[in-house]
Length: 165
Image (cartoon, rainbow, N blue to C red):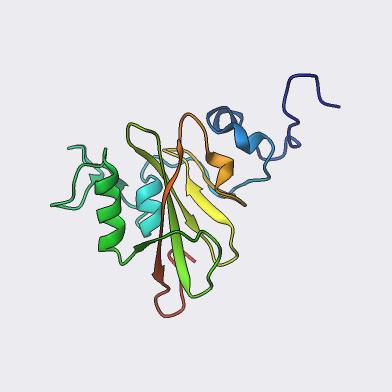
């Protein structure tokens, strides 16, 4: 039974309470933790399939940002990264089996996160230096930390395959 003034919570099965604090929508959305925490890569690198680098334009060992790309602190920078990987903007976040899609979240200040759609239609996200998770909707991550979805991009699947699937 829910206490008055609180959101009903999911059962305590493989949950990350810290993550739910950052993304309150996960408290009531079924999500699945798909990896151990791993600081070597982030959401941008996960979305493009590079699990060996943390994609950000800092001069730090293990970090990477494509040369000539606008700052990682700008939406233009993120759009160029995905454009350079063959993605183009679309308004449609629904599953199209022949396309792979990414959704870019931003606050008014900067881009904060990107999620990638799997062949099943479920979205997958690398949560900072934390877990990879799967979540059924894009709204599950909307909030003060991630912001809201500001761009959807898609590209044809290569040889019928998607990144990391």
